[in-house]
Image (cartoon, rainbow, N blue to C red; front, top):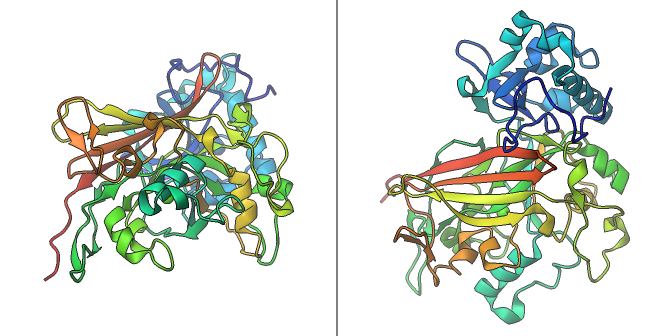
Length: 425
Ligand code: CA
């Protein structure tokens, strides 16, 4: 069988060069159609290949029968990287232009190839835990300058470890889920705090990765072990309430300000599909401690964009673009650090990269940075401006790795801002 990452591969299904889902991608998701249960599929062009159907036809011999009839990727991920590789090769071979088995079987094609427009996409895996990092040097420097001034932009620990915190798995939602403006304790000046609607609602442009293999409590991970545990990547919007955060975060860090919603893309792009897009991590100075050292190319060249459509707009405008390759600490280092005290990792754990900002002003991954905490309102081009998100704003993240004539994309991570509920009096 040919290498699924071969740029020359083509499918018998037409895929536009700007589609996120060429045969080189094959991301996994969970979908449903009218009257049928949720099951696992793979995106190909404008279609979803129904893996439950393909497995029933006996075409996925490496995976146990029924594994793709689950409403989540967790049982498949738990099978481990040898099976992931085998399944990817099998699915690629089945979809190639010169492969007759599925191509020429009209009955199976009708059952197994579902037009994406007729399907609902769901949260792709059961999120067992969610930890979020703070690993973009540009973002950490910007946020530090805004909150603490230029002389204390980076905290003393920042260049020694990937800083992170334990967030909430319960409110990780799939793209398209509306996000209600949260209520929280707000404090201005010397007056006592009030319970009211967040006035500084923000997004955070992030990538997430999902753990597909567990580690044992007490076990540290070396580079090889950590790498084998990473199943794939998603787009991630870590919605944030900056004003709620400002009052609650001392001394233990963010709590409810980042716990009300986190949106991920419905498609999990596998680590294997991103292999051709590996690139170097920025130089790390000082050198990390030995348990954090890594060899090889450990960042990924994934272009990221943020589109905003206000209630008044008929089409969205792009307000930021960035790249996953700007990360100072790699996903691999985040995972090795997370397990380093013996913290057990589980199948379905989601780890967020942290906001990904670049050097340029247009590459800032949050409104906190784009509007410099509201002091420089962002002009949207239609006369409107934004300091932070307003009710009726619809935000859409997109991301893709660009190959020669094709792109390996993630689909969208989108959410519409709904008004806050009435504050209790
Ligand atoms: Ca975050």
